[in-house]
View 1 (cartoon, rainbow, N blue to C red):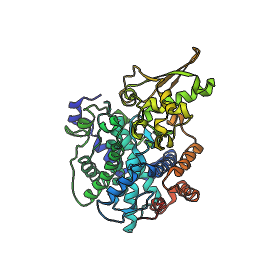
View 2 (cartoon, one colour):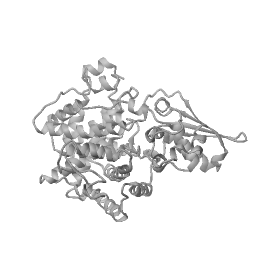
View 3 (tube, helix red, strand yellow):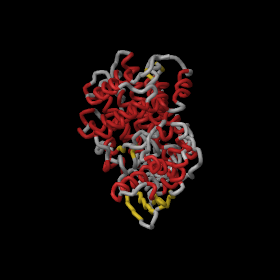
View 4 (cartoon, rainbow, N blue to C red):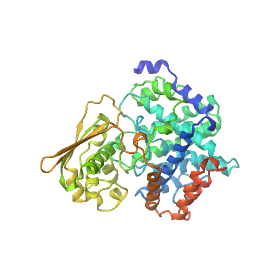
Length: 473
C-alpha cells in the first residue's frame, strides 16, 4: 500500500493509465461476456431510473434543472421534458440513484451506472440532434470504459469512505466514457479528467443523515462530466496529475491511501462490467447481506418470522459504520433505506423489501416493522478491509432456544450469486409499474427489444426518447 507521500511522488500514474485505456479501447476489444453484461445492466439501470420518477423529490429536481436554462438537447426520463444535455444528465442521474436500487461495484463501493448512463445518453441525444448519431457499439464501448475507470479507481483506494465514492469515482467514470465516445486522444482524455476533477463533489455527511442530497451528489457529478467534455472540446485544458498529485483525488478524497495493484492487474484485462452486482432490494447494499442470510435460513429451516427472537448480523467495518444507525419511529425514506435494523424488520414483517416499503405513506411507521427491527443488532467482525461488504454472518435465535447461523460470502446479486436473466427482467417490469406514470406494457416490451439488440442500433437516442412517459410541459 502507498502512503500519501508515495501518491504524491507519482510512482504509478493512474490518470495516464486511464487516459490510455479510454483513448484506445474499441468495441472489438470487449469480450462477449462484457457485451452481455452491458445489456443486462442497461436493462437494470433504465428500469430503476424509470422507477425513480416516483421518488418524492423527482419533480422538484426537474423543476430546478429546468430553470437553469432552455434547450432541447436531451430528454428528462419520465416527464419527457427537453433540457440542455448537462441538465438532463443531472435529472436522470438523480432518478437512477434516488431509490437506492441501482447496481454497485462492491469492491470499489461505487454505483457507476447512475452517472455513466445519464451522461452518455444526454450526450448521445445531443450528438444525434446535431447530425452525428451514436451507434450502439460505440455506446457500449464507452460504457465499458466508464465502469472500468470508476470501478478500478475505487478499488485502488485503501481508506474508508470519506467522500461519497459513488459520486466522486462514478463521475470520473462518466467523464472517461464521454471522452471515449467523443473519440478523444490520450491528451484529450487527460484534459477531460482534469476539468472534471475541479467539479468533483460528494460528502458522506449526506449518507450519515439520510439526506436526499446523496442522489443530488451523483447528479452533480453526471452534469460535471458532460460539462468537462464540453470545456475540453472548446479548447480548455485542465490539470494533469489529478489522481496521484499532491492535491489529487487520492490525496484529497481518499486520505492518501492508494494501492495501484488492481489497476495494473486488471485495466484492459478484466472488464469491470463483469464485476457489477445487482441490487435486488431498494436499500443500501450493505443491508442486503442480512436480508440474504435470513432468506437462506428461513428457506432451509422453515421457521416463521414470528418465531424469531433475535437476529445478530456480524458485519465488516464499513457496514457497521454506515448501516448501524438506530431505528427511529418514523424515519424518512432515505434514512430507512440506510438503516439495517429497519430493512431487516421490513423483510421479517412483510416477507419482502421493495419500493412501496419506503415510499408508501404509513409503511415506515408500521409498528410490526419496528417491533422486528428492535430484535436486530449489528456485531462488528475483525475484517481488516475498510471497504469490504462481505462476508457477513447472520445468527438467528428462535423462541424456545434454537439457533441457526449462516455465513454469506457472496451476497444475492453479486456476480458469484447473480440474478438470473428472468429475475433481471422481472425487476425491470416491476420498476416500470412503479414509474410515475407507470410504463405501459407495450412500451416496456419495446424498450426490452431495443436493449436486447442494442449493439445493432444505428442511433441510440431512440432509447431515451422512448423513456418520455408523459406529454412534455
